[in-house]
Image (cartoon, rainbow over all chains, first blue to last red; front, side, top):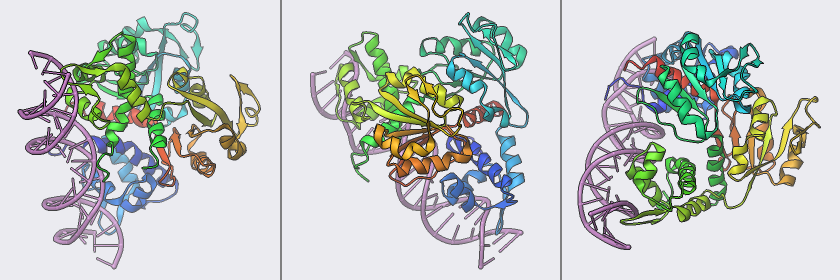
Length: 210
Length: 210
DNA sequence: TTTTGTGAAAGTTTTCACAGCG
DNA sequence: CGCTGTGAAAACTTTCACAAAA
């Protein structure tokens, strides 16, 4: 439709490009070309150029891409100019692992609240945060300015948690629960299911003869 | 190429279909139609029928699909007829969360070994397993019959761990480290990066005006 | 009648190949 | 000359719409 829309597949690759460019920068490479990036990504040069071309004419013919300016371009496009605030719902082992995962903070995400129902957990401090009861989501999410909610609960309550997040004005959800959740179309959902990934790998093991 | 090859996108959806069908079975539904499944998946009936049609003619016109037989069909196709043995490399918070995640066992995966380099962890028992040093991968993986390796290490060592897994004959890797790993083409890799998912959501927040 | 299975159409993504620019 | 940017072709995926079967 929109002629300058960025394809979904390209959007999903932008964070990977960003990571590769940060790697290149750390390796003191001021400039890279599409072949170099393709190699780092396990992709191909044409794909890299096409993807970047959706963001504008960012390279220099005969030379390549300036790493620093490309990083700033992609970061801006991904909306990573300011820290984004995240809340975690469901503070079991996965929720706890996510809260203490350094990779989020490194990439500009801050966990500002964690929720659970378990009376044994509510009120307990973890790191700098105190676990809150999920009934407090409605007030806490806006208060803390949480824009993204991570659902790390069992499947049975995930939809209810998503509904509560949406009712609080949240527009982005990362769902780790093994169930497809329904949300209004203006809300973005990403679904990560570890068991699904293992099953896909199992398919390849079962069909490797082909 | 192969005329009866199942498209990649369909393969990636098979585990989701399986989950929905198990849900339907738990809800005492002996038969479902493509519309019902589509609703559970957030998909559409044509997609469901097309996907199933790649596996054969599994339905009954005018009726729908027999839940039990479809479950057995998809399970077989996914190679989930026997328990698949999994090893976890990198036993930090994520590795530990994965080891104790009940969802794997429920779906026929068994964690048979965990590895780390940290001397404070090696030799310590977790659940029924003792953490081993990564140098033991080469002997332990074949010994324990591990077919899938989960990499949950920092980025810096992930490629080395993948190489060790491949050298031990492993043909399937699930990589949680924030780096693209290279493997021979006969090895299947799935890459899950939590920070990438948040960044994709950030894109949608930054572009919701569209 | 209901719902599948499926060719064909439409839409999307990747790859090709080369003109264009530094 | 080298590498980008990009139309056009090829490949892949989704959606449509209807004949066929129970």
